[in-house]
Image (cartoon, rainbow, N blue to C red):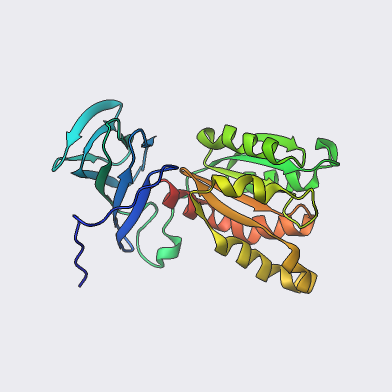
Length: 272
């Protein structure tokens, strides 16, 4: 039995609202979400799940099905399945909310790991290279084909130079429009490999296991040279961002064995 003291739970960040998980089962979760003034979870939907926001401290504006309502400390609001919902702190004081959702997206029995939405996702694809062009961007074509084969939509595609500021601007510019971003190239150790330096400061949470797993899968192909790959992933707001090497084999491995199988899982959790 776990007992949680809701009066003492809280963590705030100036970069993004914080989520503190209290209960996480196969069918539901309970979190404490902490918002600095001005921070928000933008309206979105879950077709098969109910969501409840309960204000523990502060004052919030909840947006349910396009209607905005103030909810004060001790008040809660419910969003039914398929109804758009979001919450924001438009006051001057910190906001803490208890957030509950059930069932989890895609749940229905069996292994929790696979309880994810199968909704198609919109994805931005960026190829980082100073030498390649759209005509010879094999990695970009592989990413597009892998996404489309699973019903996802590459809604944005750009070639980017190996320039830290340009990469960061491109990612920032796409964050609000897509569910995920995939960058290929610039993850090695040469002086012009700056993709990781560009995106890591944007992460609210870094998914270090992504790079670890991809390197483990690559050992059979490139052996100890995997130590020179800095592939990683993270969450920026509610968007998943993946940075993978530029070689054909690395792109195929990352897409077929890691990103495509886990994309909906990662996106579903990031949208909670």
